Image 1 (cartoon, rainbow, N blue to C red):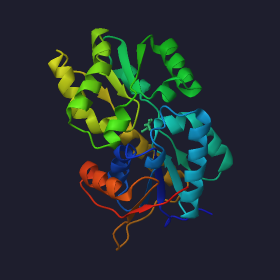
Image 2 (image 1 turned 90 degrees about the horizontal axis):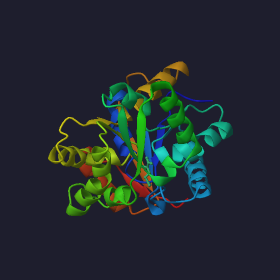
Image 3 (image 1 turned 90 degrees about the vertical axis):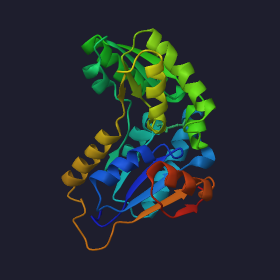
Image 4 (image 1 turned 180 degrees about the vertical axis):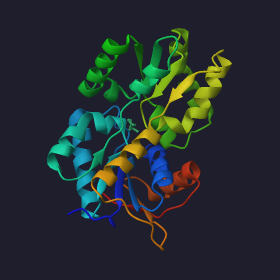
Length: 273
Ligand code: DGL
């Protein structure tokens, strides 16, 4: 039985899912949130499908033991690998995933060429392949897949404005711009945290109007919609909503990253799953 007073569980391979959590917090300020950063096992993007599925189940089981009323898979890679299996296992739980925003990108592009920056694992998944093929058939838009190994890793290490992150973003973005992409999809929840670097490099490359698609807002909106359908959205209370983070990595590092990325603090506890 799902209770409106229960928290919402959100997870990612690391801190990337915080780019989704910030939209959830803005749209659902009365909800309690539990965030799980699987930093001890990140990155997911270069791991096997079986590994990502196993991690997703362990984390979902843990979050359910904390009495969550809804689950947000704030990771494109885990969504692509495991969301159908999570929905099979927990048919009564509202579950929201994250997918690269190909549809909004197809609606925005003028050149008809869209770059998709994501992990290798997301881009090679069957779920992504079906989405891509369907949209390509329907709209004629050409999607260029750009795997970005190493990028989530640097962000995990708080490299948000350093020389190495500039070098890596330039390496992945330049071929997309050279092929006349006017729209780029951020297909990994870590990448919104270096959006300013992407914009800067695009401007330096003569593409100051590059459109950048981040689905964090839409994911929070979908979550709100589901909570309403299940009639478990929390009403206004007198006490402030609570946020708690857990990590399989170093809680101190995650605490610092949360403060830097969200300009807020929350308690972070280590847990080995
Ligand atoms: N943030 C994740 C995603 O959206 C995964 C990054 C990684 O661990 O490789 O795909």
